Image (tube, rainbow, N blue to C red; front, side):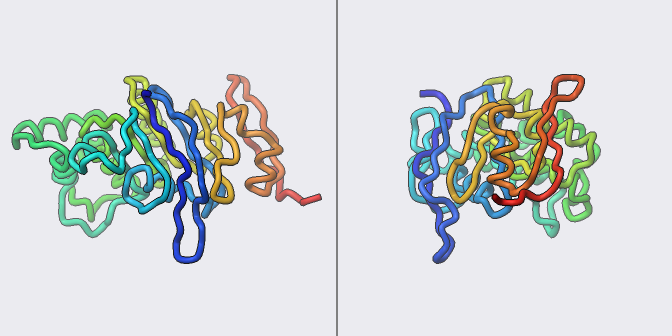
Length: 258
């Protein structure tokens, strides 16, 4: 069975249930899936659980293998994870940080590691940052270096937590275009996005998380409906198409419960 499947995922923080028996449908290679939902819905927690960075109950299966039982070194080759932000206090330069990410999953020569890491920086258009300390970079620049770290091992599954949060418009387009290209090569791409307009434009599938569960999933036009936006986000919204046929979400105000 090819793809990513999450079953009965539960996570507690103290006495609070963040995720309660959450299921994801089979997420297939070639697709970009966006996890959406209000703040504190558990999106980032779910992403970290899938990446095996967060203790959880349930099962996460990638291509038929339970990731909890895959050796760490093998898992590092299979799964790329991009956190919300890189630490600003790191003493590494950008190229060194990408090389370190590459070597965490593979034993490669210094020359090969340098060439591979530099090729990824070039692909993302940030080669000029190669010798810049991470501590000197802007938030958006660190986001792009973080993406380079996540993709340098050519992972089967790519997980991204708010990848566009610190990026200007041009870099948002570059990053999301790269995600589409990576998915098109047969990878599974899962990203947490708050911006529903971006989700509608770039996602093949949206999973809407609410109250610790999957509330809805499907194509953007199936999930981004006024009824679901009122229920999950508490807003009155219009969902229309622009002159190019793209979905647009316009928020008119708070939803007044009946």
